Image (cartoon, rainbow over all chains, first blue to last red; front, side, top):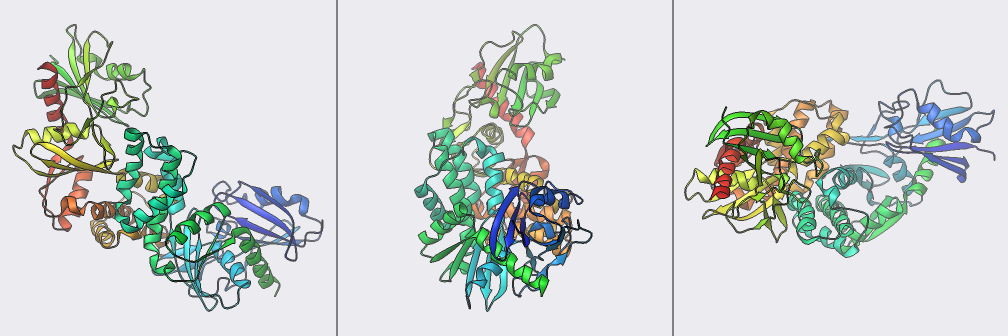
Length: 295
Length: 295
């Protein structure tokens, strides 16, 4: 195997790496050595543990995006300010690395008012736009912290972050609802919960406890409750983002499961949705970032 | 000390007991042996550890309210269905207790549609109403799971539970916001956040992440952020409960700190609010429950 460069997506909870030759993936690897588990001095060791077999004597470029560029990350890659292209600046070189790698981190984006930040999504946006000349519209990137991003003339104009995924995890795993929400799914219950919440978003906190009470009083199915919990939270998010998605050209970039859930909710509301695989977008964006390093 | 009976408030996270003579408190004790820590067979031991010194040869009545009456509790005390008086039925006798005690648990209340339940608050409501002939209005009982209760002609007509307190604990203690929210308070930031959220409740999930971004980009004070987080969550609750509190006779029953926060928010919105100490209401309610045992 002749690794030309290494693409890295390094988030809070995961580390993923791909051995690349041009835009071709030669090999891939992942671990749970995300930011949350890696101390300031542990980044290089965590990466080398994953990619050591891909390395040779000639140093290769490593291009990383995500939370790895935060202040507590491998190297701080200062945010670019919107409006701007998704990748306005060259990646930041990590100093004093192992001689077998030249590592670079892609800067995130910030918005001063209302205050907001992203790290990693800018790379996916760049990758998505690279294949679509003159694409204007809105991109939704669902995840732990879902982003809604307004794109025009190749620039990120504005964006907004929602803690929907993290709230789902906390409520289903650690709140009183953990007794009433288990594995399982019901598409009808999901779209009904989305529609209910869109019409009365302020009722969220009461509807949440209703999931517990429906279990205690009516023995409601716990997989149905999981779909309802997801529907309540995503419905609230769609109520807040209605100006973003109503009548707009719309793309969802995310892991297949969660993208499908968002697409289902949006289509039910009459929106036209294109979906794009997050990994493909990340690799396309990291390739663009690599070009900036070498130019 | 001549303990005539023992009043007990037994919730998910705490156990509190009072040695009583008539309606006079002779002594009090508390521990963190709440429902969450006590196994099905551990209730009597947890209680005796707290009240042993109050006991003599003659058995005394123990009257307990709260989650201790749940299915996983000391004895299941089946819910009464609303509309009903707050204490419609006599407390349920705990079988096979230590000969020095006769223990009883107060039943909670349930509402079939929309599904909802309470355990403990019914006792506080009964105690509050006992001192107020012909009181009609709405009672807010803030806590981990805040209850809004509509009272008319001595009966609980309907109620609704909000997970506001639990969401505050999860978000401030375990989400990404834990890095940006610390001890401290700012009354102006709180009432501004309440007002903002009341006007656009659907923006909650975006405003939450805004607290993190305001710290990263503007170094926002973390005590101010704590007041804002509380304001965002309570504002959402007040948006949902507007028909409950707008133009109604209104009482808040809770611990002094959280009651004051709710009263501040409600007064800012032009509501007239009476506050009542939760412990006083609990003891008055448990006294009424004791009368039902002996009648």
